[in-house]
Each structure stands twice: as C-alpha cells, then as structure tokens.
Length: 147
Image (tube, rainbow, N blue to C red; front, top):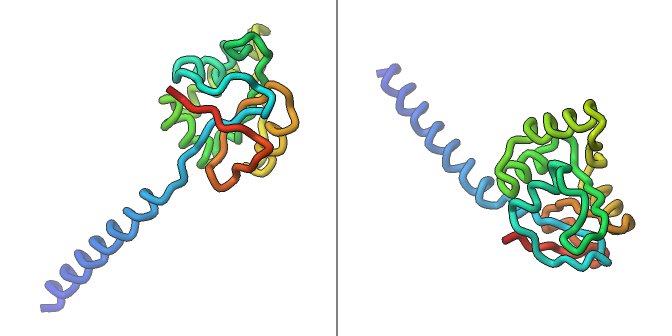
C-alpha cells in the first residue's frame, strides 16, 4: 500500500512540475533586434542578420559600418537569440569569431554584461546592432524587424 502511495505521489509531482514549467516557457519575452536610431535599415533577412552577427558582413545593407554588440556566451538571452533568431548555437558563433581573430581576418563583436548595458551601448554607438527582450526597449533604440 505504501509503495502504491509513493508511486501515486511521484506521478502527481511529475505532472505538476511539467505543468508548472509550461507557462514559464510560454511567457519568455521575445528577443528583438535593436539598432542605433540613426541606422536607415528597418528590416533584415535572417541570412544577413546571421552574417552580421558572425562578423562576416561588416556593413549595413546601405553601406554604413555596423558595430555588433552581444551578451556573453553563457547569458540565457544570448543563447536564446542565437538559437531562435539566428538558428545557430552560441558556440558556433564563438568558433567563427575565434577563427577570424586568430587568423587576423576580423574581430569579435563587442561584449556587454547585461541588457541595460546593451541598450546603452546600442543607443550611443553609431551603426550599432544588438538584441534585447521587449521589456528593455525604450525610445533611444529602434527595433529592426527580421524577415
């Protein structure tokens, strides 16, 4: 009887844990591309965005120099952005950056500590591109839509 009760309790706990985890996933804020307000580009294709964040494309489509800002590899927003928006894993981006830096053909993006710093750096750096969760947006940065 005790064994049956423990099994019943375990199944109830597992069910409640899986249900408790569902709303948290559904509530995750979307991560949006943000740029300096003077950037003329309003929309980017996913391939272009991926090339810019991989540091293979160094200019906006209109020719203006782009300055890329990213959160650290272990930051959950960076991991989500890489996977959801760029369709790559963070370690793949890091490998591409390391290859360019060590070969002398390019540089890595500028790292920021958190989303507040991301917003400040993008807002004050001409040609800047980064990403933020919606709650960190303000009128000092513009959202760039992705096709």
